[in-house]
Image (cartoon, rainbow, N blue to C red; front, side, top):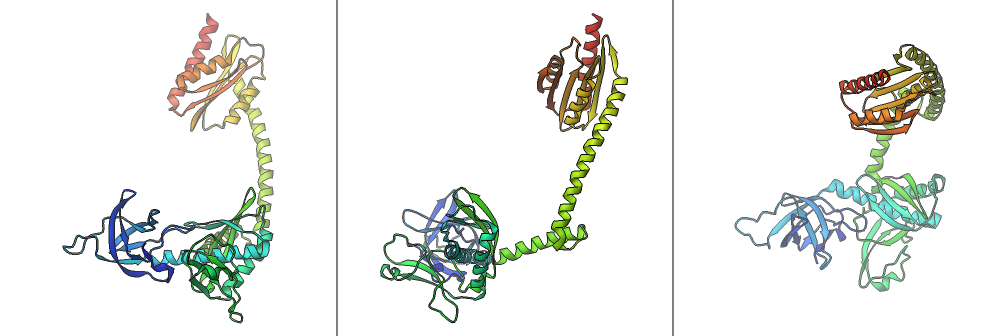
Length: 419
C-alpha cells in the first residue's frame, strides 16, 4: 500500500516519492507512488489537487483491490533523462489553499456533529464536503433555526478557545477507554481525531472520532462556523454549513447585497424587512389597480374592434394580429367580442410563439374550432375547442406568414357565404 504522508502531517505540501507503477485510469494517464501527500476522495472529502513533476493532477483515487493510491494526471509523467523505467523519483506539490479549505471544513464538521449530539441528541448519518458548501445529515426530523442556534453558539466557542487537535493511531485495546461518538468494527490500529479540552483542562476532550481525513492542528484555525440552511428530508434534517474562508466569503457577498439593497431603498439595513413589506403591499395594490385598468381598456378596445369588424354575409368578423400580445388578453378580447351579436373573433398574437384565440357569438352557424384547426395546420401548430370558442398555438414564425393565414381565413369565410 502507498504510504499516506497526510496521516502524520496534514500540513505537508511538498514531498518526493518513487514511481512504482504507470497505468491508465478513466482514459487518463495515472501513476502509483510508494508514498504520497495527496489525499484521495473518501469519507465525504474530495481529493487534493496539485502537480507531480509539474504535471497537473486531475484526481486522486484509491484502488479497491490493493489500496494503492492512484494519481490521475492531465498528461503522461515524463521520464527523467534516458531512464524510462517506472522506478524514478518524482516531486509532488499539493494545492495548499484547497487543502487548507478542506481541513477547515472537515474539522468544522467534527465539531458541529459533536455539538448536535451533545445538545440535541442528533447523530450525524451523512457528510458531504462540496465545492461551495458542506452538509451533514442528522437523524432528527424538523429541526428549525431556533433549535440550532445554541449548537452554533457552542461550536464557535470551541473554535475561539483555540483547542488543540490530536490525530493519532490507537490500538483496539485503547478504543475501549475512549469516549467516541461512533466506534466502527475494525481490526488493527485505528486513526482517530481528538478535539481536546480547553487550556485549563487539557485532558477533557470535546470530541473523539475515527477519521482518515485532513484536519487543522487547533480549532482556532477554523475561524468561524456558520449554519446557512436547514432542509427537512423525511425523518432527517440536512444542515448546510460554511467554515473559515468560505464563511468569510459568504458574509462578504451577503453584506454587499444587503448594503446595495439598503442604499437602493434609502433605508438602514436593519429596516430592510419593513421596507420590503411596504413594497409588497404596494405591489399588491398596483396589481389590483392594473387588472381593473386593463379590464376597462379591454371594454373600450372591444367597442372599437366591433365597430371596425369586416362584414361577411351574416358575420361581422374581427380578424386582428398583434405583436407580443398576452395570450390571456387575447382570450379575454375574444370572449367579450363573442358576447356581441353576429361577431366572429379571429385573434392572433405573434411573439415567442403564435397564439390563436377564435370565438363567435351565439346563434351563428359557424364552427370556429374547425377554422382554428385549419389555421394551426398552415402554421404547424395545434389546438382545439368547441364550435363557439377555440384556442391553440404554433411555433414562432415571420409575421407575413401569419398575415397570409389570416387573409386565407377571411377569404374562405367570404366565399363560403357568397356560395
